[in-house]
Length: 230
Image 1: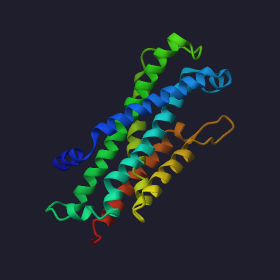
Image 2: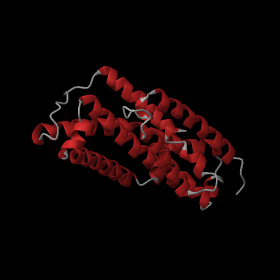
Image 3: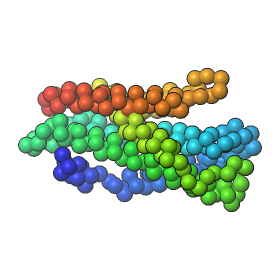
């Protein structure tokens, strides 16, 4: 399996992946700054360290769950749509292992991207805020161990959650369906569920449940896909 993952990574354009990661983080930091410039928005979204951390989490998770759907489209959906996957299936390698290697790459990248993005954006915004005072809130220099554990759990959930769009994309090998379903999932989880504007992302059990569901769905989709003839 490790060799398959290495081979798949060599086929990927990792420079574009790295550039996308950087640009997404720059965009998130930019959005936080724009919110800080507007007093009303700052008082609503940047009123406390917890509010800022939750907002950063929301931006990072939304961005990288959607980006994961782009990777799924490139690594799996397009190969099935163009039937280039049939050439890979000619090799004396387990079809299931071949597809699982692709999914592992997407999940692991999503896991690390979410954690790295939250930390990078948090400390970057903290540094810019100390200079330009986008908000009067003082962000702590060190995140607590409890928060780091929370972030890791959330990232694991996102690693599974990011695979759910595969179910929709593989039905007709549709790239738009894959990406749109990811956007729909993000929109649903980020919508408010009560008068306090609490969203489903902030209820840790919800993304964790969907993360487990994502891993199960991915395994079922792969199991069905390897039985098809090309």
